[in-house]
Image (cartoon, rainbow over all chains, first blue to last red; front, side, top):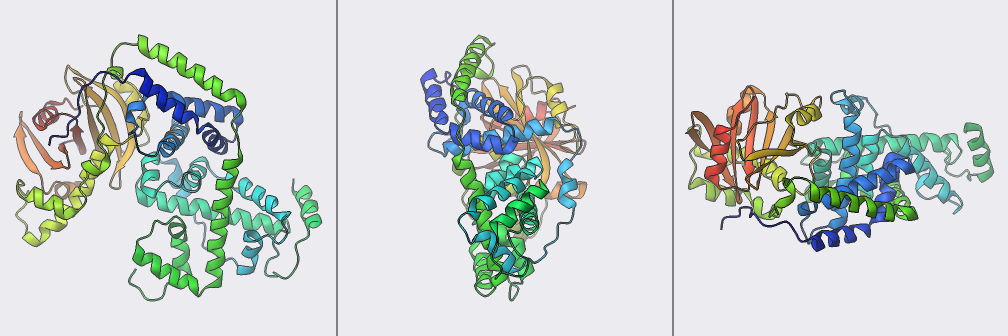
Length: 217
Length: 282
């Protein structure tokens, strides 16, 4: 009945090795996320290495049978956030960002359709690239929260655990992060001729796009 | 959501949660009802979905550099060697970490039933308030137990109080001076987290081979009494301690200069209460 911890000898090295081996199967996904988080291949490698060192060191924290990949991603993101926090001496640095008004402006159905259903398949990678650019432009913690929600699909409760903040903060921060991405996406897409504001019937011209992109670069 | 028709403005506020399937069924139905008749909100949701899909897709396509795997393996080997030669501190005990579902009761009602048998109410409120007070107290204790039994590694790993104090500087709104728990106890690390809506510092200790977690948080004065309803109040070693059982754990708490110290751990209740009462708080 008493559910108290028991004092046992340390795990035989084999169990620890098994965990590391299983974790290495997710190396690609971990690196990919680390790369999006840090935006630097060198930093991404360091982050992934730090994560695996923690996996080895804190292997007892992992509960066998639960979602290993989610656990790994939590550690990865938590490590990234902490590194960022350690470099910031300001208190509640993100509350400043959280309080800036972002507006809930209505985007016309027409303008959005161009982004969600690009008419030509050639446009798809272009739109994809714009989405990535918008993501990269976000402050670190906003980008991290989008990655946690969209890539790893952690629940809000799990995200709160990783970020060390209440669930309410997770919801509002995620909302803001996505809004920022959308705003940039739509504005940039308009400027590049990807979507024509209010004139859905106008076909999108790839040459026009390419020209304008060069101008903006 | 009990209001009549959902407006576009309201929809937009909750579109994320709809996309992430984080809404309660009632709210979800209300939003979907609005969605069925609103083209612009449909487009917005389609955009959110497209962005989400693209973010996920781009990550799935990237591969790790070939050399990374071997680099990691040698780093791990290096780490394992140095860990083995380190003094036996945290490396030597295997913790039996409880799955969350055992630590946290499934329903408030079941907890209330168990607790009513052994609880002394702090104030003599009306019986009808009991469930409400119970409901306000339980989540706080759940947060504390979750910090102890959770699976994430510490944010900072250090046995030195000064390192932990400096980690929390600027992150919580009170100075974090780690409690000293006695001769056979030492600090192993800490995590930044929260208890309900308050920033909290979770400090991890090894006490005679068992893990004990002390969660520190500050609360505005008027709420201090409210939080501790539904607990045992005890005078021990000259101090006032409150404690209650939740799931398989006991959480005991003590206040010092506006900061609450909540203790929980893999020890028996008597030891935990003693630790709480005798801890040296700075």
